[in-house]
Amino acid sequence: MSAVLPVLLLVLAGVLVGGVWSLYRQGAPRGAVVTTALLAVLATVGGVLWLLPGGGQ
Image 1 (tube, rainbow, N blue to C red):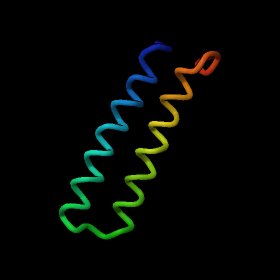
Image 2: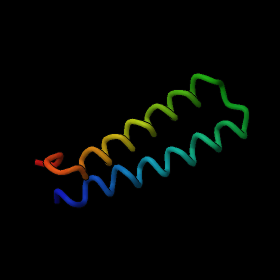
Image 3: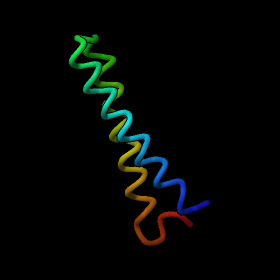
């Protein structure tokens, strides 16, 4: 299970990045774009940190 969670976080980050791009292209309010982008960054950082040695203990 420990190996699956970082992959899921990185997949979620990819979906969120796509959502950010879609929101931006549709002219969504800046707050929605920034919030989604922050969630994408958090998911990416979480996935990468989990993959580092000792991160998924």
